[in-house]
Length: 217
Length: 128
Length: 288
Image 1 (cartoon, helix red, strand yellow):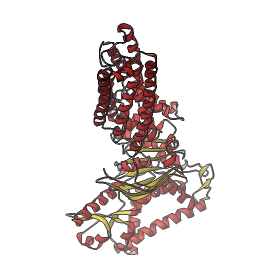
Image 2 (cartoon, each protein chain N blue to C red):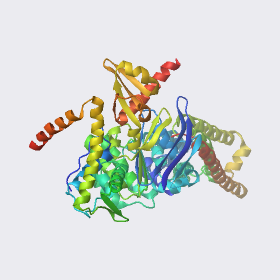
Image 3 (cartoon, rainbow over the protein chains, first blue to last red):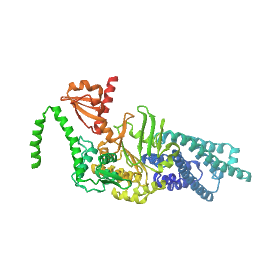
């Protein structure tokens, strides 16, 4: 399994997508007064289709299936390396968010760059993964439909949160309130986000592995 | 050992070709007794033929008493007296002649005609 | 010991059916797997190694069922499907450095030996290699972890005659000690006439023969004669072709006996394949 992840980063995925891209999307956090989820979504728009197209053109699954690994491990490895790239994006995002707050202060027209924001971001990635992977592993080849479906889910979710923040003061207070209670709540949202991310990824893996088992590569 | 030549195009099975060439070398005394024949798998590799084919040829040689095998060491040329060699040679010739004669009989040739032809052709062979 | 025992593999596709495929291979031998394009060779090999999901049947390798022991067994299996068209933009040394991580018994010395033997430059990228070189690289990767059972799909296609001959020599070298076994598919039957001990012949998803090469060639005769001769024999033959001199056809040797005086020869593997294909064609026409 570890070898499969190592293989992905050494052979399958261009380093641009896990070194340069996180910094580029992270740098978007420096734009003032912005719906920051869009910065993270460039991962969905650019990295996802590129990486999965490259898997196809390099015959990545054909290679993996020849190694002494189970089909389950192939799915686990593939999802794991994907998660690692997502985490790199979130981490660099967090670093740039920190710089943003230092530069401009926390106040933002849309959702502020606080703990709750990253909790919601984890949920958005979780949603993307649970939609994307089970559809993708029906073929382990066609990435177009799963990319679109997962994007729609992630965009609707993030848009709903942003709109609630804009038009519902109670909700806005939950996510942006500065009182100690609200700050605790926001940390809880972050932890919940991480929990949902882990849970959804696990479910996505289970569903994907089952489907991949029945594919004839 | 003299060379061995195997033909895939021949109608004769390959093991038969191998058997005939080695047995003739033995019967002509070209292979010394106790000479160690190459191992089956090595011979197969070197002659570029199947292991099973070589096995078959070696087995036939052993059945005919031309070679003997020592477990773990391989096959060796039998130590045969001139008398035994002669007998074996005659036996092989008998078998072959029987086959040939059946063929001539089917063509409807008489004994006298055959003998006449053999004499005529043998003198040609000698002059070769 | 049986290195491979395949029992009753079935696999249904829309337009193709792999029908109850069974055969086995003893340790230390080379088996050639022949059949025309689309006969089911690759599907069978993929079914053996669980690359495709088989509908029915069992596969035992080294006496162990592959279902449940797949990962452990694959450590001891070398497997190559087609040429290496993986990661065209990567250098050979990068790919091999990854492959070796997967195998506990990777043999660096053997790997470097094959690179040298095949004249492969590890600094080159896959896309810079010719088709023949790609196959050699795929073979190098497959053979460098001391596998005891080597399964190769069409390893000789795309190689020139000299390279093919070298490869067949290598196969015989590999089995010389008797602890390695090779199963390889090909449609170039002259490859097999040189080195195969056993032949498995598949036609239209069904195994026609699986036996030693000597017995297979011995089992059939290629006959030719006049059209009158054909009339009596037709029922007994696998199939036959008419020409202006009479006919030629394939018949099982045991069925040949009653027909004295007919010119009969040992067929080549090609002959056997050609007349079985002809039989199928005839049957198809008959069914319409």
